[in-house]
Length: 84
Image (cartoon, rainbow, N blue to C red; front, side, top):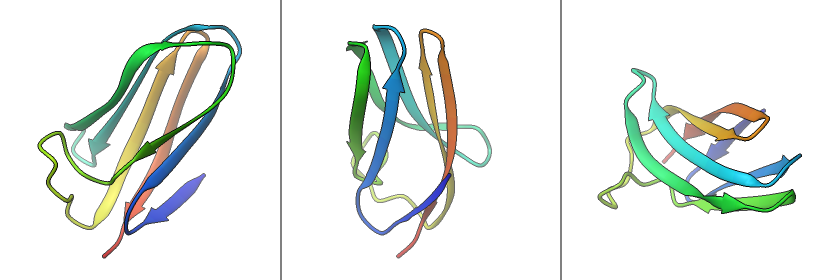
């Protein structure tokens, strides 16, 4: 799916098995702009909020970003459009 955001982005996912979850946001050049999540999570439905900012808390420039989720038996990439 593709989502637009002027503020917070909600990332929802379902874990088939519990384990370490890494959620990073990358720009279109593939550079990591924010490491939103890196922690163990249990099996089931989860939702994580990201405030459309980089690691330093700066607002990201408008444009496309990729939210990449890596977990045990689960890999997701979602394109997000940041708008002003």
